[in-house]
Amino acid sequence: MGQGHGWEGAVLKLLRGKDFVFTVTGAEQVTEHYRRIHLTDGGMLAVTGVHPTMWVRLWFDAAGKPHQRAYTLVDPDPAAGTFSLEFALHAGHAGDWARAAKPGDTIEATVQGTAFTDPDPAPSHILAIGDPASLPAINSLLTALPSTPATLWFETPTKAGTATEVRAPASVGAPESPGASGSMAAPVGASVQVGQGSGPGVEDEAGSAMKTGHGAEAPVHVGAQDPTGARDQAEAPVPGADGLPLRLDPSRHDFHPIPRQDAGARLIAQVRADAPALLADTPDPYVWIACDTATTRALAAYFRKELGLPKQRVHALGYWRP
Image 1 (spheres, one colour):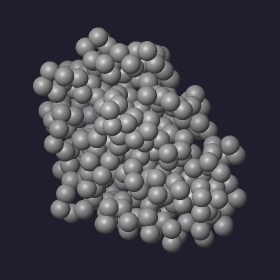
Image 2 (cartoon, one colour):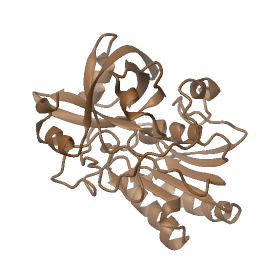
Image 3 (cartoon, helix red, strand yellow):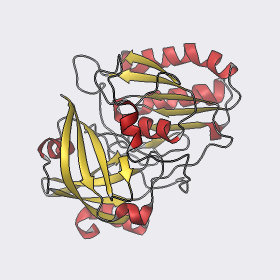
Image 4 (cartoon, helix red, strand yellow):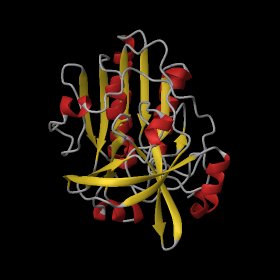
């Protein structure tokens, strides 16, 4: 399998990436621009296990050349050997594949670089900042910490566009570290690791920069990863989320939808206005940031340098490049 993945596939092999073939079993059109694909795992979950925010690299054909993007697993069920993936639909090879995917279709995948470290001490409050590209990872994180209160600032798409003034997920990410301009093309959502990272979210065609596993942590399970219950829990419409499938519990999740304006400046300003009071009120906060790379860097610097949070309490991973 990896022999057909070009130099990126060769590097992933050297990094002990594992290859699998997934088979489509069905699809749901969640919104006009957001599609969920159901798959069998080709034996992957029995080999890798499952951890929160777990992601895989999918391989698409781009005019005869391999093209990879990374996606967060949705509702992984190791016993059944199934999971789903969610795609923000944009022009590009991955979006084209997702639109056309039907039962029986197959797609090659590589697992390498995905990991999660259990925050220690356990968070007393989660401060999560993301957008449609990181939505599956947000859902996974909140499901993994089912009793922890959380505040979520969620940047919503501009009405004129599809996903947020996008230019792609490498984790949806930009070509910065760990991948750089000349580095491997990255998956959806995979890219700039500003702090400690997990991986990508949904496809937002256009970025590059592949996550090579530098600085990746050994996976540690945070709470139980419920393969089916999370979906039953709260896939009801969330006001302000534009129909996107956020899984929030109103009794413990405080949701702030923020339209994308001025290249993320409005989101940054709102977080800066709200965060100090929240941090003053909780002993063991955990900050999780997964936006475009510029916004992610700005917010990571704010929490670590201006507010003085230790680096192990701030996870920051750029999911796409503006």
